Length: 68
Image (cartoon, rainbow, N blue to C red):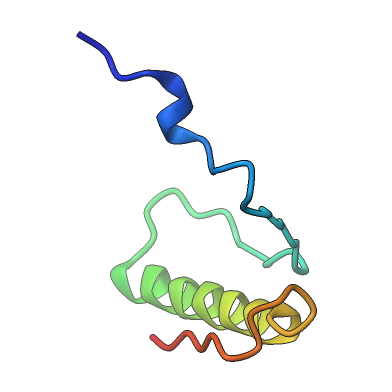
């Protein structure tokens, strides 16, 4: 038994918006340390939160606030 594929798509009444931010510089490393991973993860989270802040009013969610 499988689920119908249409269950995974948004309702036709929902607008889906995708925005892209600036690329994040990542230095290639064969065996990164946990500190390097954590530092890059912090950069990614900050970039993602900044992207949300810059675009939330433009795309209809001015009161939506995301915090980590």
